Image (cartoon, rainbow, N blue to C red):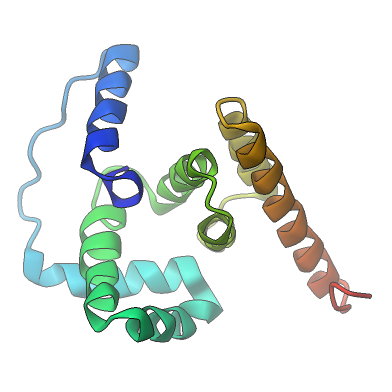
Length: 165
């Protein structure tokens, strides 16, 4: 979660996870070569963003080229692309974090991303609803609206209509 909420909150989240699950910290990863993070990041980011990948990279680079590099190497290569959980589970976890942070734009991207990497609409909706049980009223309303809008767009596309029809 440090990718989305920063180190202090990530430390709290990890502590709560350890306390609730009783799971010990994993062994330190071996053989994870930092020189491979960019390549892995490009592959993982392309899976999550599918047809929006190049546009995303251009948009982030317009904000600042270092952010585009960091997104690929650190965000997708080192964090989201590392071994352990499969990408679908990581995307569902990301959705839950983003619901709590009340970040609709990023939620939209990762809702789509979860579907792009194999989550079913039911799995995504369940994740949103579970996250909503711990969210503020505003965050709940926004998360449910973003998910509803995305489903409407997907349904319209599947039926050959625009979302406005």
